[in-house]
Each structure stands twice: as structure tokens, then as C-alpha cells.
Length: 46
Length: 463
Image (cartoon, rainbow over all chains, first blue to last red; front, side, top):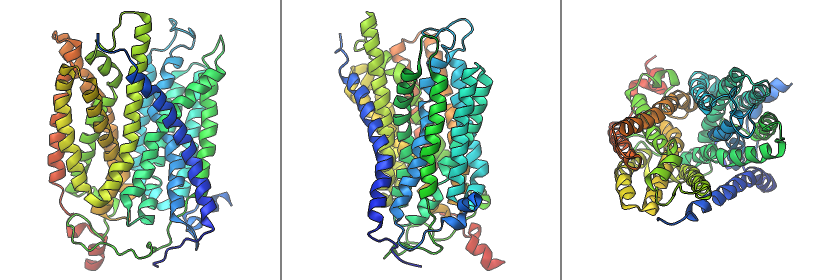
């Protein structure tokens, strides 16, 4: 069997599925970036 | 009925199914079980059960509570090793369901342990039951993804395993927000948080259970032609798991994973104190306000490492589809050894920028090592039981999870006990890690094609 079993009806499912996993991941990255910013706002060497 | 729904035969994709729905299904599992990397957010609240804002005499110590994570990682390795063949046989949907039951169930049992202040129940819940869920969940989509993406196995497994790295980025702030919500003057809110997370993670994982499909037998992407055996270490034949562990290649790859993980853990386990002690001028402990800022910045460093750990998984695994797995690991070990050897120099120079740069590159290769290994196994042993073989190889992770932190903390304590300044105590550790990576380079260099006699196809011909 050698076939590309896809059709256009998959597009909404693909969007929903990737948003479902993507939104929490992007939220986690965003929160982490907030804490990373503190690393570079630490006081300079004394 | 429900049992039928979970059977492999009910998960075979019908016409029109897009294979790009399988990576999100895998991510539903890995984004949840990756929370294990964020276990440390529970350490402090669990050690303040009676004292609430501070530790009381009857409270557990952080060292006691930390054992939960170690138990979970050990059971992850054991479950992956012993249940890998079962996962391969029953298919991804039943395996993902079992993982969801165990991981979420473990959380709920642990919340009971937190409620009645019984540490053994937390060990059993999150450590044992949850750890089994981690092991089953980690390997459950690997074989399915490799069969759906024979043209890009590194990209496919890298996407899923990236989710495990990303799970901590979600799990840590989620737990912090929930504990803030549930905390009262008489409670840290950890019981309610664990219970809520158990329920939320179960529902999230069930979405993956519903979405996942296995490729029909013999399915190939349109236009895909399996590579000819021109590359010596890529085979189109297959080795079963019980036979794979009889090959020297399996043990060389075990060593490759063990050494790469041990070296990465050397940074991860000491990241926060390391940056504070190597750069004391940048993080002065002169006033409470500065101390708080120092800890916040160190937490930022840990967050940065987590981001690069996750990014490295998708980056290196995808790149390995073009460069080859062996060459990718050659880079990990060669570049990693050089960077580890340079970290003490960067510390002595007082260059926090170069120090952070070296650490984040090392962390991309730590994550990349995890994400590239399933495709490496597929190249060497074929796809037929790659999930089960991967499960057995993950015992290297469990071993490194114990060896890495012990090695790092032992060397550091020994140095400080012999009068070495705290800021310099990490130098020897870094050089030891560089040597470990050189040994890993040799192990990887020694990997050759599997002997013909081990292949299922050869055995069938001679039978």
C-alpha cells in the first residue's frame, strides 16, 4: 500500500489538534521567558 | 465495547486520515508526563505541611520529598524496559490509556498522601504508579510515529519527545498558579493542586487516546522510496527486541545515551547553585532584596535551560534526518566535551554571557540525545519492535538519573571539603563531564551495522 491518504476535510481537524497542544505549550514558553528576563536584569558585577 | 475501542485493530487509520494528526496525539501524552521534570515545585509546599510558611519540627525535609522524583524516574525506566513489548503488541491507544490511568491516578493517590501527611503514599502514588505511567507514556507513540514517518523519523519522534521537555514549562507554572489559588492560612493547597492536576492531565491525555491511529499495514507516504542499504548503519530489515539486546550495538547505544544524559544532568542538577556560586559578584548576598533577586535570576537560568532542552529535541532530531544519527551524536560528544572543558575558563573570566551560552548549547544536545535515539534505533534495528527496544534502552536514563547527580554532588563536596573555593569547586566536575563525553564519542564511533544473523528476515530464510 503506497498512498498519501489525506484529503482537505482534515484541515479543520489538524488546526484544532495542533492548537489544542500548541496553546498550552506557548503559554508555558511565555511564562518561562518571563523568568529568563530576570536573569539578564540581575545587577551587574560589583 | 470500551475494550474494543482501545484495541489495535480499531485504531488502524481509514482512507483520508492525515498522518500529521499523530504528532499532536503524541504531544497530548508527552506534554502531560513531562510534568515530571517540574516535580521540584512541590518540594517546598510538601515540606511545609504543618508550618505552612516555614518548616515545622514534624514536617518532612526537602531531601525526603525529593525521593519521589527519583522513584518516578526509576519506575519510568523499569516500566519502559519491561512493558515495551506489551506496548508494541497492544498498540498506542491502549498503551496511552494505561499511561493516562497510571499518571493521573498516581497524582490522585499522591494528593491523598499529601492530605493525610503520609510520605509513603506519595512515593507509591506519584513515584511508583505515576512512574509506570511515565514509562508507558514515553514509549507509547514512538513506534507508531516511526511507521507513519519513515521518511522523517527524526522529525516525528523529535516532535513527541520535545513535548516531554515542554511538559515542565507547562507543569511548573500551572502547579504554582493552582497552589496560589487553593492555599489558605492553614493549608499550602498542594493536596487540591495535585488532585486537580490529576484530573486535568487525564482529560488532556484522553484526547491523544481518541486521536491516535496506526498506519495500515504496508502504508508508505506517496512517492516514498526506502533508502537503499548504501548507508552502512541504516537497515531495511528488522531485529526483534529480545534479539536486539544480544547485539553489541545495543550496549554501545546504551552507553551513548547513558553518557550523554549523565553529562547533561551535570548541568541541570546544579544549575541554580552553580550560576550563583561561579558568579558571586553578579549575585551578591548582601541584602535580602539582592538575595531574592539572585534566586529569581538563578530561576531564570533554570528556565532558560528548560527552553533550550526542549528546542534541542526538535532541532537536533530533525537535523539528524539529513546528517545521519551517528554524525549527530559525534557532534554532541565532540562539541559537548569542548564546551564542558571551557566552562571553568568562562567562569574565571567572569563572562556570564559565554557561560550561559555554553550551558544552553550543552542542554540542546542533552535534549537532542533523547529525541534522536529512537530514530537511531530504527536505523539500526528496523521498525518492527523499535518501541520495545527503545523501552529497554531507557534503563540508561534511569541509571544516569542516579549516577549524574551523585557524581556531580560528590565531586563538589569533596572539593569544598579539601579547601577549594565554592566558585572553583565546579571546575573538576566540568572536566570529568568532558572526559565522559570523550568516552561517549568512542562508544558512538564503535557503532557498526548489526550482524546479518540477528535479522528476522535472515532467521526466516534459514529456518
